[in-house]
Image (cartoon, rainbow, N blue to C red; front, side, top):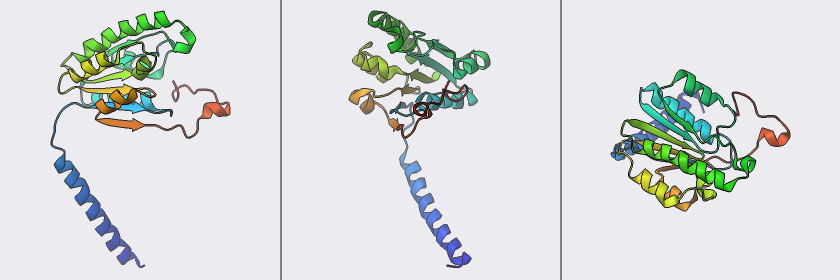
Length: 202
């Protein structure tokens, strides 16, 4: 096939693709905040959520972030938010991973206290985006009531978007979410004996 025919074939293909994209954009006529669930066994769920937070900050939107589980070890995202964007409502449960604490009652108390911070954000009309990082673990371990969380998300301000991260999440959370992205664990450096990398893993 000569270059002219290749160019014509490519143009026809792109015209068809553009027509399909334009039609989908035309059909999307509902304007409101979204619920996104980033789940799966692979790496990158929290990273993606923080990417959306930075995207919102780029438009001068107000952002709220609550990290369940994490907070015992300093992370790059925490340093960036606290140092560069102190205006962000940022709260960490601060107990570290549940397999380190080994204290169910203490973890539940910490989760309930942290949830009150999340609930305040979910009721704040000025917040364009709220990230509830690792909240699915609170459901998996039954530290927090699922119906309570779903009710709070359903009753949030109309324009507010909520990002939920963590493995699993359960059927009800998946049904609640407008977008569900599952990150699969195809290969991980840690299993090959490579240490977690500052600026990449934390």
